[in-house]
Length: 131
Length: 500
Image (cartoon, rainbow over all chains, first blue to last red; front, side, top):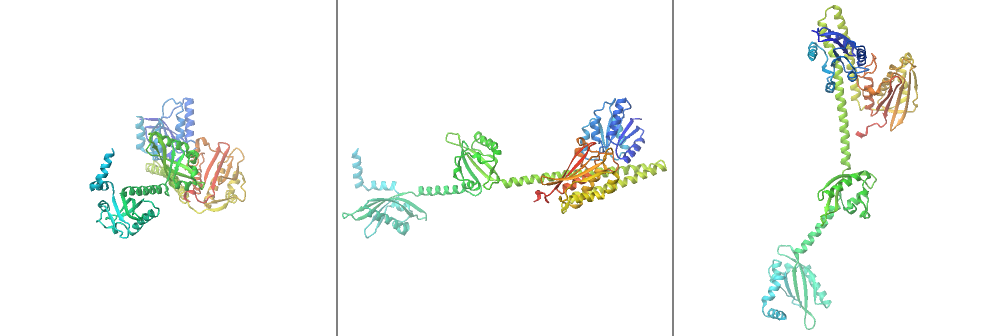
């Protein structure tokens, strides 16, 4: 059963994003994966989606610490986008800093905060968020 | 009514009861002494009771000294040809205490005009005299308290003019009695006037209770001392505040120590915050690699083909390399943080910059960067030499790494003096950093700003730590597409004043 047709992975570490993609694609609830190296790349892509009325992702897995535009800056910019439907954003980070966890709760778009490593259980929890 | 007077005089002559009653009830005693050669003395029973002794115990009652004093008065009286005198007589009571008597003496003369009797009328004034002595002692006692060596005591009238100040106040602030009658507020530093007036207002609103305030006053040596005061509005007989009593003591040392503690606390707080951040950063960076390792091992176990397994193994190798590198980085940071008290040595700044440039020679050449070192040859900085090397290498290699690809890259190095710091400036015309977005992150750990594969995100963090370990600071001015200027402030005093 498909829960998410299109998933964005926003992650600057190449190995991490490859692993995330592999794990996600092994779960049949998750569809197509697109990878972005930082917040800016993902934001640019989403801006294009909004302009061209293209396919809006169902889920964004967002890292926090990234160069150019980090996860927080992405979230700030993201809320200004006029997308056709709401997107489920999940933070996927190595940070266990309580300040980061608290801060993520202040963004309405953020539905979940997960710490790496990503595994099957976590994916099921993410599916549960939209069920 | 003269008949009554005559009757009393008559009775008095015939009935001894009258005389006895008068002297017994109103006097402390009566003396009648023979001034002729016999030297006999008589005293009333009332006198013996007053001194608590057996009748006739003259030797015990009057010391030789006291007796001489009495005889002296009698003689003086005789010599003056007068009949009466008064004197203070000290008698010794049975219980050893002094009995003070006021003695009015009347000298009686014979037909030849020679004194032959002395009549002494004695009033017991011991109680009054003791009270006087006590009051005098009390006055001395309070006087010594008022002019004590540690507390200021002043009084002002309702208008705030000095009416009394104690000796200690005079002594400490170098005033003299000319201050009485002048406005008290003028002796306080002007910045504290409103504080003082507020408390005076409270004294009027709530009299007879103390109101506390700390005020600063110039000391006689020119320094400013902080004094803790207790002001009290004292009510006069009309129920109005007639004067203000102020008691104060010096709390300068106390406040200085408090200030010092606050600064130490602030420093500790900063260090704790830094340590906590550091702990989160370490956990973040080690965790990010260990998370990859965990995932990769799992993926390998479920690998569907040899090729996939080989790819995972390659990724595993990369991850372990990165983990090892992270640990090396963290070690560098810990070293910079923990060796804050390394010995500092003078170094010629221009020479050190030239050495670093020489080490970067190949890189500079390849990148075709034009470098100008404008530091004067005699500029010297007190530094931990290894830190200076590391700082210069980091900042200069960054300037090369993030050079402009569109215009000919330049790096200009200079220095100047400012507020006790020697400031090193490194200006490039490179990519620049958007400070509006990134100011708080420039010197953070693992923050990178450009998509540069080599960027570790620790260089500026370590640089900042090393500069701060030498009590200096670092600042940045930058604009995207224009370039960056880093300013390194070298603190020229060896020790921070906090620990001096």
